[in-house]
Amino acid sequence: MMKYLLVSSLILLLTSCATTSQVRQTAHISLENSRLWTDELRDNETINRYQASIQVRGNHISGMCMLKKSEESWRGTLMNEFGVKAFDFIVTPKKCELLNTISLMNKWYIRRTIAGDLHFLFEIDNPDVAFQKKTVRYEQNGTLEIRHKKNKSIIRMPDNSIQLTNLKRNIVYSLTLIPE
Image (cartoon, rainbow, N blue to C red; front, top):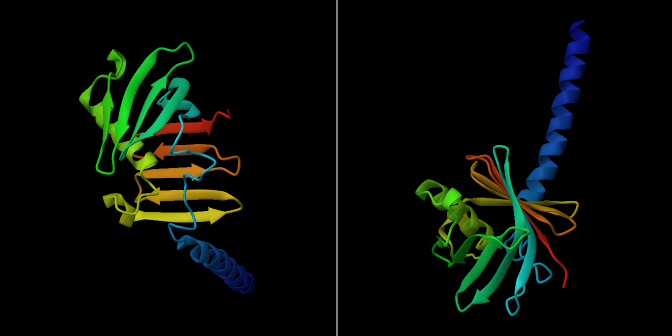
């Protein structure tokens, strides 16, 4: 009995070391090689349109997000399928500000959480933002994952859809590019 325990423990140790070394090799990807926002996903000259959804504890908002580069900031809006605007936003390298929020979302703690998440999402490739030093990037099988401590995670799937998860508040944002 003791032989089998020793052999199985040794096999378990060797397999765990093999998988750890593979993750460790991909964990230190440089920012230039693993950008979230590729040229296919976001254009600096034209209006970018995305199918968007936000899920919070059983509640779901879906619609379209439109985004445009304006000088040093990104300006955008989120509206539902009927054209009712949920909120506008402006993302700069320093912060994100929500404007014209609907009454359901017009509470300081909701605005602050969504603004922080959008700032993280749209400025993740900017090397000058403060949170950049606290992020780790992983790439495997065409999927890019960026983690910020234990609070937030962004995943870009091979089909170029993006999913941001606020792990602290249990909020999931999904963006899929709408082709022109």
